[in-house]
Image (cartoon, rainbow, N blue to C red; front, side):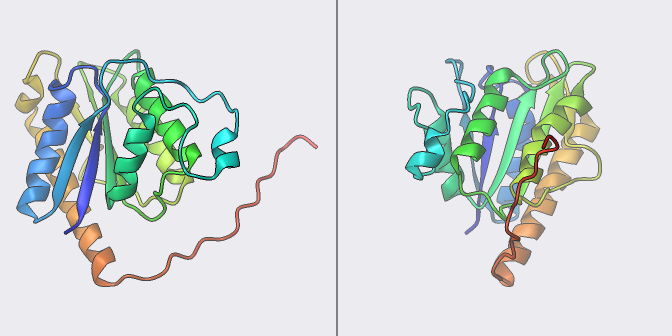
Length: 205
């Protein structure tokens, strides 16, 4: 059975981000797909300091093991797909969420060809900017993006308020159905991924 990992990047464990992710998870379960909602908590999450030691060790882990990053890397590696959800703070996702994703992907989490999606929740504005910010890393590491009938956004401020956003909840359900369809398609016709050799080029010579 396929498994989807949800990362809840909200400091509120069961806030409106959790409501949105739970709607996706519930629909995935109806589609016969297991899931886990992992909360990153409220403790500090380091930002990447570009030390490069994760590449030197080659073990796919960040050398700093004093926060949730390596725990989440293990969960990402064990999952077949990834959904990252976060609230909107000043037009962007919380810093802890971005720090976690950047470090996990740079350290070498096993993500290539795993479907991915972003979900954002906000009171009023900034949702699309935050949504784009969360999606951009996936596009750099060969993760197919899972879409819905609208951007994966829900609105709400007070506890449980996102449930009143009927279009937002419908968007979450369609996201789940699209995720299930893509996972079934991948598993029914597995094929080796074709990845060109990456050769970085700086503009300054």
